[in-house]
Amino acid sequence: MSIPSVYINLEDDVSKVAERLRRQASGQVVLVCPKRCQLFSDSINLRLLKKQADMLGKEVFILTMDERGQVYAKEAGFALKFLPKVGVNRSVSDVRPYQKPQPYQQPEEPVLEKSIPVDEPVTEPKEQMAYVPPAKIVGPKFNSAVRGMVHEPLTEEYPPSPEEMVEPEESNKPELPVEQPELLAPVEPVIRETQNFFPPEIEDEYRSDEKKSALPKIILGVLAVSVAIALLLYFVILPKATVVVYPKTEDVSRDMQISLSAAAQQVDASKLILPAVKISQTVNVSDKFQSQGQSQVGNTASGTVKIYNFTKVPISLKAATTVLTVGNKTYNLTADVTNLKPTLYLDARTKEVDPNSLGDSVGVVAAQGGDDYNLPSGTRMEISNQVFGSRPQLLYAKTDSEINGGTTRYLSVIAQSDISGAQTQLQKDALSQVRQKLQDSGEILAEGGYSITVSQFSTDNPAGTQTPSFQGSLTASIVGLAFKQDDLDNLINQRIGQTLAANKTLEQPSPSQTTYTVQNLDLNNLVATLQAHFQGQAVYAVDLGGVVSQLRGKSASQVDDILSSKGQIQKVEIVLAPVWQKRFPWLTNNISVTVASTVKN
Image (cartoon, rainbow, N blue to C red):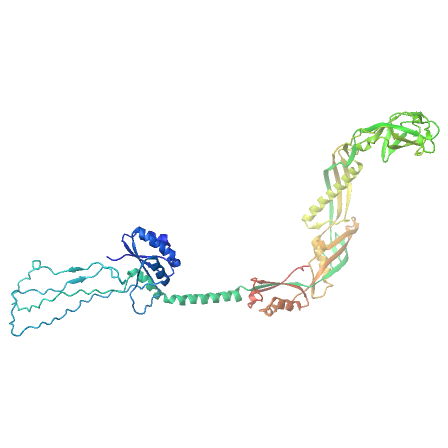
């Protein structure tokens, strides 16, 4: 019985190989290991495998062409199997591929010469015995080239016995004497060892390498085509260049006095006449406004004071005609003061006042509410009287106690300035409505080109009313001359273009570049004067004919020098793609050169 073989893979480890051994029913197994497999990475792997095989009761042989693996296998205690030595092996594998077995050749029968004595008579055999051929040798079912492997026992098939032999049919032909050969000694069977070990499917797998001998050429061809395509993309298709040229410009400033006329039908640049349209509309507007005035309604501060009278004569002060002040704060007497005696000094040299000469305390109250009217004790207050006047050196007062109790609280009040501001704002709103309607048709009602007449203005509350807001309404009539912005830009462009050189063009005017005011408005004759100021730029004409062919294969700096050498170009922007590209492409179709309409600052 032949020994089964187990073919392991390069990445199989000890556990996988042991599992495959466990599934084998035979007690002897040949492990066929390729070179540089994982088992041979370390000698400990084969030692572990040997222990697993012993535990499984398996006798394992190692067949490999890996020299290091053979050494590790011997150290671990495995027996080795080897392939027979044959001629030049063209295979690149470490095992020999399958070869078709040769047909079995029957060895020639040996010719035995027997010496017969002369004096011995030749006697015929008593029985005619049929020729017994040598036994037919049946070889093993699977021939192995592994030396030392145990083959299946040979089986011999012998010819049938005389009882089993079938008697040939009788024939009318006369029987001829048959010379009976002598019995030969049995011939030792000859066993041929074949050189194949693997089944045909394994051999086909290894022989497929010879059939794929054209693969390297195919790979080389594909690589060559890929390199050619890559070079074509790199140098021809992918490179692109974009050039933006900014022409030189110069500032242009003009002041023009343009005539607005409702009778004109079209723009006249030579005479500076601009068509105008009469506008006459009556507008009603209303809006809500916030009251900006304020009224102090907080509590008033109050207290008592002592009056100092250094006039040397008794005086009287009426509450209605006397005012006490501290800074800009005003206080009033709560009662009239009569027969106020003069104040005396204890010592004239030190100006120390005699307290006994002072009169009784007099009550005072703040003229308005507010916490800023509160005062501490001892604060000096100046006194002003309609009869006596203001003499701070001779007549004044000091707070005898704190002036307190004042609180701050305001109420919104409609001031007269609020009424005037509301009327002005409503006039602006009416004018905005008219201008918005004109803007839809492209017309402009310039400042100073209209007259506004207010026919009615009213508010829901008069000035002085305590309220946080009020409603105002206005009716106004607006009459004026309007013109189109496009007509004005056209006139300016034509007028300045008449004075520019042939290689310059005026940049298209925009509303922000032109300022104007209307003067001498005559609504009776529907004429006016428009004082306009234009501040713009004139652009040089750039000729780029044939310049693209000059840029092929040039670097960015060379292209910049070529284009900047033209007097009409102020700035050049260059973009090369892909990013690694350093030179302009050779195909003119991949080069784009454009002139910018505006100049970047």
